[in-house]
Amino acid sequence: MAFFHKILIANRGEIALRIQRACRELGIPTVAIHSTADATAMHVRLADESVCIGPPSARESYLNIPAILSAAAITGADAIHPGYGFLSENARFAEMVEAHGLTFIGPSPAHIRMMGDKIAAKTAMAGLGVPLVPGSDGAVATLDEARAVAGRIGYPVLIKAAAGGGGRGMKVAASAADLEEAWRVARTEAASAFGNDQVYLEKYLDRPRHIELQVLADGHGHVVHFGERDCSLQRRHQKLLEEAGSPALDAAARDALGARVTAALAELGYRNAGTLEFLYQDGQFAFIEMNTRLQVEHPVSELIADVDLVQEQIRLAAGETLGYTQADISFSGHAIECRINAEDPLTFSPTPGRVNVFHPPGGPGVRVDSALYAGYVVPPYYDSLVAKLIVHAPSRREAVARLARALDEFVIDGIKTTIPLHQRIVRDKDFLAGDYTIHWLERFVGGE
Image (tube, rainbow, N blue to C red):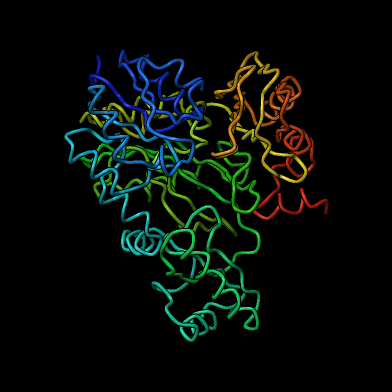
């Protein structure tokens, strides 16, 4: 059954290909949009139709709402899938899509807006019984307020941008002497990155894991989760490797978290896909934010739960109900994803350029999501992610062994990538033991 006549994919690279594949299996034609820099990109070559929407700059192309809506109009698309990044969590874009009589494949604009404001998101989750990290009740407007909150919750504290993400507008104050500078810098960064200098304070946890829960909801009170992902391996708040499930959780902890989250989202009336992110330390979860979109790391959840999350997004956007309950979902085995970036594995400097050889690994339980091909030129204008290597096996030990083997097979020649870093990580004793926190990778790449 074709749920839509035609879907325009408002993205590029591997996620555009991922959405194309889901659409093709559902019998839905797709429209690719692209900048002039992406004229020969794989998502353009494989789409049913393509429209150039502007020059290389993302602001003039992939963030150009009028151009995207015009592309949908001239091709006769009746739905838009935003993927991740770019406009995927832009409530105004979702509103404009709906105002033009199209379906936005994602949550409602109201929920995107609510969860995009970190303070509003925390307030909403607290009201629904979801635990939070101790911190300010809202934005902290003055340094005196910041001092009062820090004195109440205790140092060290984390100062975070209300409209933030990706580590921008986020600073740690280890003591009262550090607070003024950290508060000033966080506000300046927040204003520059998001056009909003509001910040709030949280207790800084010294050894947490980053645990997130993948959910789907139909807007009719039915919500299910697809298990947790451990995303603790991060550098400068950017995830590099994710696994499902977490080495730190057992089934009881997973079930308790899942029950609380799905009940909260049912009460909220949420619809489509979403991911709730938590810090986990000393057996306690604390909500930090919700992403109202598909995540980069969604494949690990797909593999352990045997589900196509993109197809489910499309079904739900078409108005279908879930048609199954939490009891119908079971988890099998262990999955791990490595983000392969076009970056120097030592300095992390971007390495755009021509790919001379592209040889992805294969074999049982190995999946590669990538838009690379031999001869493709990685442009310098966009995010450096060029491939995702995902493995699935009956146990974590077997998944790690499979991942190490697949990394050794993976050949991308012509540009430097982070493959050598991942090869080091998967052979480290701490990683093999599943013993790491969100601070581990910073120390690892620093050579400590």
